[in-house]
Image: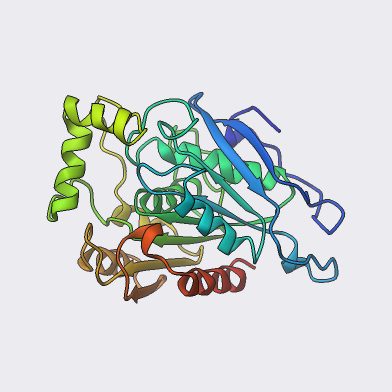
Length: 299
């Protein structure tokens, strides 16, 4: 494992096949560009590798969980098990969650955590990576795809550290799936989001987060305010993008996914599903359809 920052991982020249892909799970700590340790797990998957069909061996999923989740939570493991039927899966605990270091910035610096996980998947030999995020993780995969770039395009923006590496690093993604993500920051239009803002912004709320939800939340406000999901979406093309949202989502109503899809200007697919919010609401049938979409689009 490389312990260097995600933007510094060298491109692999080895095309994975049935002999080079790992067959056993691997757990380690990755290191982000800003020096945070991220608890990460590689699951080799249950699909049968066929060396004569490159698409069956060089794909990996990277799963980004929602706020207060972590790599060991049952609802996160269920998602991993579903995608492992298609390809190997990297999952991780965002900063401030589980055994990872640092404090949660609720979607801002978390893009660096995802970048480290994507770069690790490529270091393990996977030429194609699909990022799948839920709720907060859904906003992170959108911002990550915009900031780090995806498929080759002109005019890539700088990376989140302003280094100009976006689109030219092993942290890029080949397809993006955002599930139950907000379109804009500071939304307080539903009771669950008002409770979440209390949790994040009040000292007593952060104590509840630390001791009740095992999530360490940073005490400082965003400065500057990061690129919002709806601002990120236009920068993702031509990387394939799927937006999934529940018509019964108690956190973010359907104007959020519609706003994201509109910002994509015809580039994204939008699935409005009969479900609630994020990993807990995503059924096995939906996860299977997402897996099918990812395999088809990430080539």
